Image (cartoon, one colour):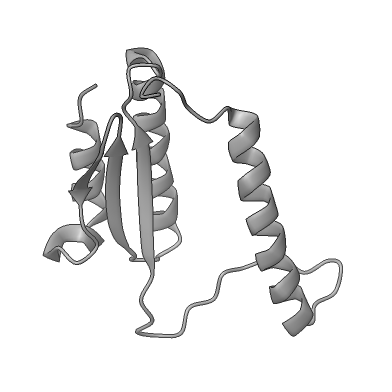
Length: 123
């Protein structure tokens, strides 16, 4: 059915299971005390790709699409504030997935340009 979609609860359950496995594997290999902060550490020159996925299906509606687009823009800004320079990928989906930006494109690491690209997406 082209008008069916996963509920937020279904998605949360699937992501939580995957995230829990990842964290448990990382904790098994690391040592830290209860007061230490969690961090993502990248080796110099290490590649980091961040994929931003935006639901553009009719069931979402224009308002929620714009809210999600704004949240992704804020995420890009927050990541940039940490000094990280990942390569971004942007995918929208409705009846079919559409690659808006591939991480292999030259400007995919330009956070400002990625934010502009996000703001230019229409419902």
